[in-house]
Image (cartoon, rainbow, N blue to C red; front, side, top):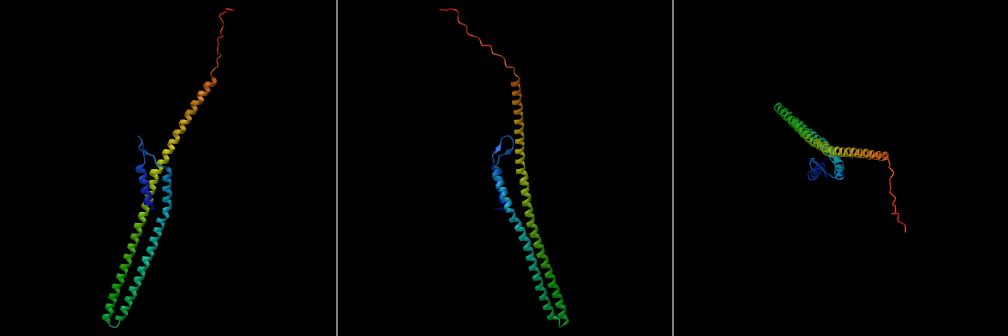
Length: 193
């Protein structure tokens, strides 16, 4: 799966998660989200590989442009050498060679610009994916961890309050005076037979 597919899966989980009444919060399966996060981490190297491929592709395109440039230069020199015999031919050769040089320069510049645009677009998309992942982490996981921490703090406060109450009841019980019981002894009616 790609990073974008993982992000879509998280969005589906969040959209379909049951809500907690009156809180605006949702309940999600932490193990499921952690598994998706693990998948995202594992798929990031593919995006890094894609960036490397873009760099290699740029080098290849520039090398092709240079080769084409050199072929055009060689061709221009050949044409110029053939035309050197007469001044008019020489002048024409200089013009043609100048045009060929200009075309080669324009072609090389266009190839560079296309390569830079392609690299810029690819890196922008990669940066955007990383930003979305960071926002998603901050939005969903940060809130989830904050909610868990708040819940644990409330639970800890409640336990501490219960412990104080139990200790107070134990202290009161310990200090309570034990009174002797007066148990009446049954007495017979006094008539003896």
